[in-house]
Amino acid sequence: MNNSAIIPNKIECYLVPTIGVGPFRYGDSEDMLVKLFNLELCERACESATWRTYELPGQDLQLYFDDEEGDGLSRIGCFDHLYYKGNNLFGMKLDELRSLLGNEDEIGEVCDSQTPVEFYEFGLQVWLDQQGECESVMCNPKIEE
Image: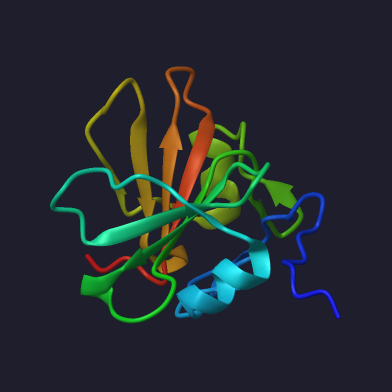
């Protein structure tokens, strides 16, 4: 029996609001996911970082495990696609996102030419580029006000 990781060619990122994305669920064991998906540990963002970031080989997806947020998977970063109700959020403008998700809860300050838009009930922080289109999404169990 081969104990190597089983990695699909491409993991489809389907959002299950406040539960997870694709095969990943918030709270999933770090050790289990590292073994199953052959995750690669990234360098820490800074010395004081309390989280560990992993990437899936060949995918634009990151998994975050934060000791301060409890055991298991705490956040998922999607940088290529994220589907909800058959719609890919990437490339959508704010009006299209509102039609799909309802009104946003907060629009943040521009950071590195991107604007964060929060949808608390979905646990989403959508990042819009300079053209106002979704270019990445941070998925969370639920965003508290």
